[in-house]
Length: 193
Ligand code: GRF
Image (cartoon, rainbow, N blue to C red; front, side):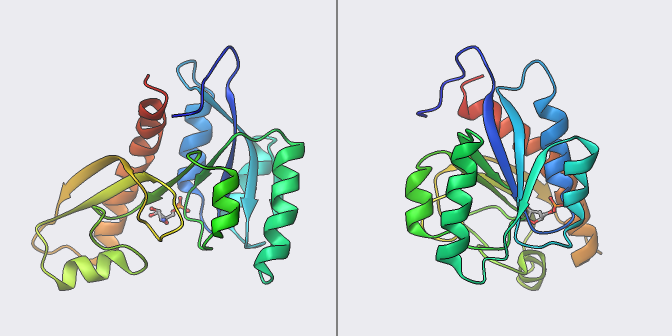
């Protein structure tokens, strides 16, 4: 990994689109002594994202960009991130696909969390597809982001057993709880901590 902690924490931005429960767990983790990162910026493509409330609660800067014109939004975003000295990005339920050009600018420094055991079940409606296929296990994965959807190098995964009467909602709920622990673990691993 190109990142090095040096003496201060790595300035990190979290990109969200919705509830932001992973954002909350990352903020809490970032405030612990063992965390190599600080959360200094929140980005959302959705002005109604509930997770944006954490910007206020934890006094973190935020920016909403609608991504209707991806080139335009991304170039604005790149300059905002530069001004704010952001070195690393954690995608957490961010529903937009970043361009090759954007990813290149943060090569090896963008992480994502996905609610499946990648490389299985990339993309949307993960839990539904897992249940339809009568899988015995599912889980979640933190990986580096490359230009192909949910396809970058895997950092860490956590597996969970699917129960007999499992529903989409029950599976989503129990995987989300695992996600909250897995993302901080992935960050420690990335920094060899
Ligand atoms: C998580 O399940 C994450 O894996 C997926 O979207 C969901 C986001 O949840 N990419 P939250 O907004 O962090 O609560």
